[in-house]
Image (cartoon, rainbow, N blue to C red; front, side, top):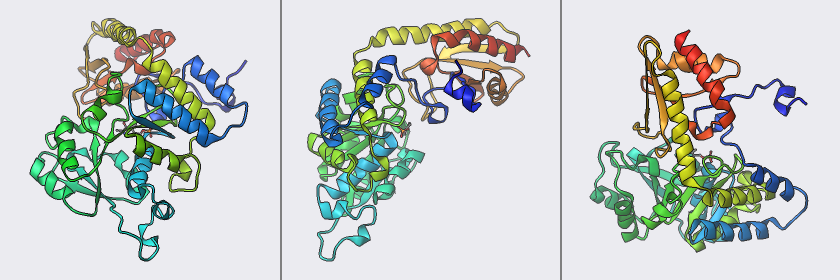
Length: 377
Ligand SMILES: *Cc1c(COP(=O)(O)O)cnc(C)c1O
């Protein structure tokens, strides 16, 4: 039987790069696919389903509340919109255009403070809700006084923190950042889309002071590719759900369907309950196998390590790094991608980075063979 991809003339590839949206994100486990198929068989009240699935997600993740979304990017927009509106229907109705508020409506705070070191291409999801992003500090320096001065204004709505920028010189530790924000009554939203594993991170950022944290459902959790989570404060996450479950709001284009809700919940339950140590061991073995297969090839250096370049996530998964004395990392990456089956790997500085996160056990042989071919060819 030909696959759906073959019929379309699209060739499956070996993903040794990671949970990239452009490569298909991650692969749902058979249990998740079965749950999605089951959810597709009858009608339900979607708002009721969302509320009940969210309660279960909160329980499983050890958090106060949850909202399921159509991705971490959507989650940033939804969380921002919910914070602007704070349950006021007249505000929710006009977002993202606050100039359309009825005359005489109470003023609305719409400024989101973001440290310069925390600017990421994903933060464009925030103004989509109708907010204005305002930068504080520089990419290499930020003081608590500067942050305090930026937050101490009535038009400030929210402080945004991108978890993978925490080690940047222009960042502050999250507990310190949140303490300053809370002094001015400003909530903190953390983008931790790709910060899993470790599993403890599901509540770590909230424990450190975040009011809301967002994760991708289609990365390490391996739920439906277009799914995401907002976790945190029970009241705020309920207000988020009210914008998502398909009422007419700024989040209408980010609606979540019954299949995604059930698939994501199933994936969260499965992932949280899985043997994380066994997964870590098998990822380490995979990387060791790749390194020992190519390390002795002429002109090649190969070693196992963890990402140390800012923004390369997740840090908690080992990589096989491979460098060739006479070939650029880009040329090796491109040659691997042109093979059949194509192999996708990352480039990190002057080396290629092989990430075992999305690699299927049955792909390891073809990966090693392809890599050996390209490195010796
Ligand atoms: C992947 C990612 C996102 C977007 O996640 P989606 O679930 O694909 O919408 C947002 N922020 C960061 C930091 C990411 O790594």
